[in-house]
Amino acid sequence: MRVLGIITSYRRLGNTEILVKEALLEAQKLGAEVHAIRLPKLTVKVCKACYHCFYEECKLGDDVDWVFEEIAKSDAVVLGTPTYILSVPGILKMVMDRVLSLFPKAERFRRKPAALIVTAGLRGWEGFAVPMASLFLLIQGFRIIDRLVAYATGPGEILMDEEVIGRAREMGAKIIRALKGEKILPKTEENECPICGSRALEIRGDVARCPICDLTGKIEISNGRIRIKFPEDPYEHSKWTEEEWREHFEWLKWTVQEYFRKRSQIEQLRAKYASFDPFISPTKSRE
Image 1 (cartoon, rainbow, N blue to C red):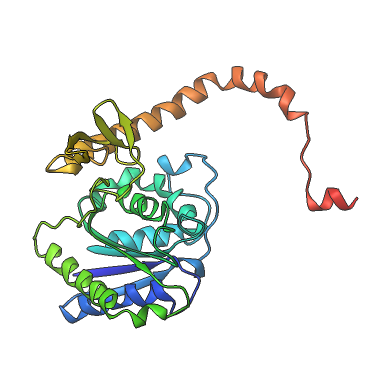
Image 2 (cartoon, one colour):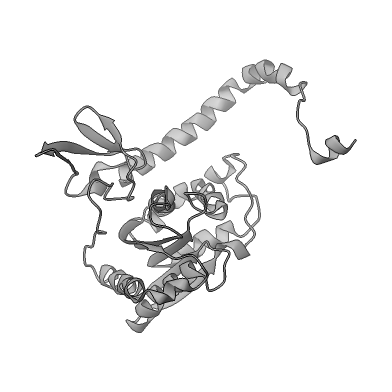
């Protein structure tokens, strides 16, 4: 059993790293081989949306292919991220933007268990960090078995909260149980998406829809209390099925082919914008 920790925090031995390591230590104690990656220490280039990776390896030549290979070699993942301005650090989004290169190799990632740790300074200010971090795992085909949101400010301050440290340890044990075949779903708060944990749901008539997972639940009102009843097996009613994944990949390939079919006409229409240069830069502003 190989368990990989992925840490997006720039702080060494900060709250995020400590919680991920606590989960890994427990997994190691229970027999797993454990490793960790610190994303901010790697070279990560911005996706150019060239779609070259649909047909050959990505040509950017940075560390992202190595990251995905390490993830593919692992049996489970523990992702840890702090909250930056109500969301995740940019480094995680930059790696997530490169995930299209995995579509041709989807079978290497399907249905593996993953767990998520999000840290924030103040309760209620984690914003969209949980669903955004969940998306990084879901788009690769993982099933999220556990989520932990922890609150602390200064680096290492989380160590003062023994209950949260215990939860991280429990997460490591859950990963091992999942790897041994136990079906585990994360505990969810009332009226949040059971897959990604999002509370930002769309209301459409008598149903609520998660815009990330495309999962719908029936809205029920009893004694003035609103409750959203989601399906028993949420993954099978979401966009994260293998069928949806492959359909989306085929659609993306079709859009590339369509673009090349229309390219000459598009280039003619783009001509006037090529000669219009309203952009400023530090160099231009000093001239």
